[in-house]
Image (cartoon, rainbow, N blue to C red):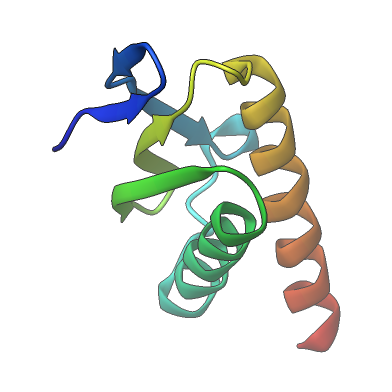
Amino acid sequence: MQYHKHNRRKYLLLFHVILVVKYRKKILNNALAETVKLSVLDCAKSSSFDVPEMEVDQDHLHMVIDLSPNYSISQLVRRLKQTTNNALWKCRTDI
């Protein structure tokens, strides 16, 4: 990982975020796991953060997030939960 440099500051903020499925239900199989990964990466493209590493298990999602100090981690987690939830509901209705 490289430090980010702007004007008079230098930073490297990495957060380990775990999103858990409600009641720890084991619903993230291959197709749904790919849908969740793609929705997180799309959210990262449209927002100002990077996801260097991500892993999906059957009932949770691990991410390492590289974030600027200008943004709040709580706002980022809220956005991630909204986008993944919407993607899962769309995938579920398509089936």
